[in-house]
Length: 429
Image (cartoon, rainbow, N blue to C red; front, side, top):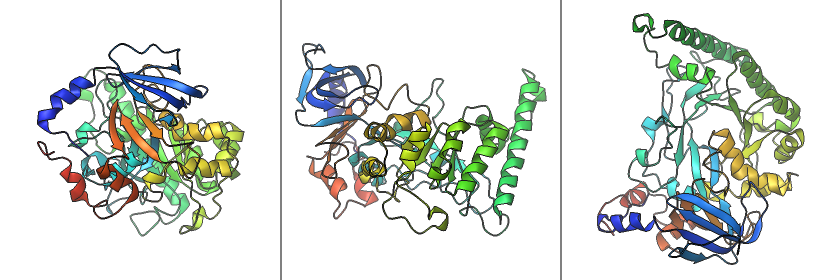
């Protein structure tokens, strides 16, 4: 991720204090109707005002950017990504909530720049799905930064935003100590949640008496957070019966869940809608294959969930879908019958809801973070290009910049981590 030379850094930061007005663009706020000729005013990393030309007062001294002929969307939210070379649990056990992807992210991975080139501003970095529980996830702002700390999203109180990754179906079935059947998979998950519930009860019963507190358990602690609603369970699941197993476990233990992939969502859309899950994060692929349990995938999944009244969002599962092609997810869903508005919503605000960040990101509204993507045309057009991506009021991708263009279109050096790392050299121009 790029870093500015120290000699210019102070001036750059000071410049962000001046308001910035994008004028003339077609604005798609997502939370409200489109504005054909709009003004988007940002200041100090936040959206200050959004409205039609003439309805938004542009302060004296504000920098104006003429965006006529362009489209401005909220930054895209990828609810399931593996950029950064993330790692989670190992082969020692099927359930490892103590593993934390925060400890295994390479911020020099060129895929961060490629995600920016795709208009993605927030991503949920997840470990793989070869375990019933493969570790804790982390929600990142795709800012330019030198270390992982520069990209973290902090919750009130300072905690790092993130969830926990679980899976069922074929991925987690293998030789002992892993389960060999679907029934045994669910049984192992139940046993672990029961332990976590008992652990949480001991902590509650101890109250302020430190002598009565149980020894800290790094395995049970994240599960207890899931049971209390502090940590969302992101659940990899494809087949209709596996989806229903997740819903059954959710009812039994009361955790908040987001369903991921849900290839058979069209079969059980009503059950998903009635379950109270936070949402379904869909992967939209136009060439299904490679996994037997995904054989009944339909482009109509988004439409089926919309019709049932269930929240649907999209994800890349990068590199299953390249982050640079994330906009295609909405187009494929519309091809399958999803409404245009809900497809754009699924790229943005739906993902924010699933990550519990809807008060900060996902739409162009006054008071929210100034995360936005500037497009050359309609977001559903195959000809549309991402021109610029902004995070917290700072441009992190500019297609007109040859260095950024390389990440957008590929070529020698575009996938070299060392090239991305080179952007970190403070003092280098």
